[in-house]
Image 1 (tube, rainbow, N blue to C red):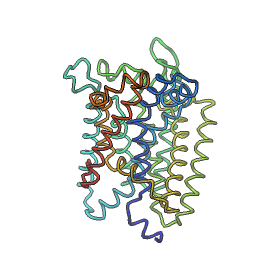
Image 2: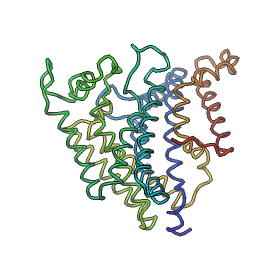
Image 3: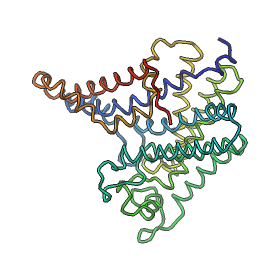
Image 4: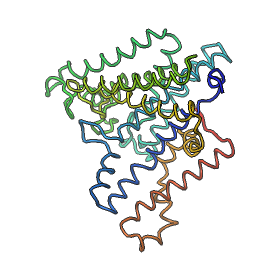
Length: 367
């Protein structure tokens, strides 16, 4: 298969990488936490810790998951928007699509973690979910792709990082003093609570001003998508992805000395560092699948990745591990403390069967 043929087809590595990310979300964290409760060893504790977020500073493997979701959304933008403009040059239709997708993602975020299904206004959270972060990053990155040149998009990316870093460091917070990157002492969280009031989620996560970081993360994926979509040879694309990834990791770590890596407020050093890791992961999947053509192992990831929004929402709304418990409860007497790990596997199996059935029948939920 030549390079031009590849560019005209769906990039399988992107679907596989999205499926890998979803697998971490819907299965890995619950499974490794349950496994540690059963085994209680030092090794299982390391695994469980790596599939949970750090209290504040630093980085665990699980911190990759949300940025990777946003990053992959960005990777697809050059393909999807270019395709839409090819079939319908009228940008008004495209703007309607962008706005519709923004609103649907926000509404699904309310369903997943905004507590809207509780029908209790006092417990509703207006902005508290990954899908809503994607909505913000997708909207602004798509507008940038439509209206800005490549150089201006790079400038926008850097500007988002610098402006947000300044917001986290320079303002004065009433009754606290100068903003720092410490819990409850930074302007991002103060601003969230000031604007959203009782609708704030009450955690130490920031959402509104973090939109600068969400947009930068999606833009970093957009740049990767442009690179893949270019006429450059596939081997060189993979090499450039690796080089950019290494550069991003290095810059993020160096910047983190003065501007710490903090996932909960999506600090600018966190964006650069995690974007670098996302580039490395994309390079690995792209090299293995689309360059070397080793595709036999990809199908399970593809099945999950091609219905990513569906699997994300279902996993947050339906407790599949509890559903599995109704089928596997007889095993508890035999497996003891490992029972929760068994139901985590069973719950994932039920969800995967639903996705497999949808894939087999070519049912793909898109927004």
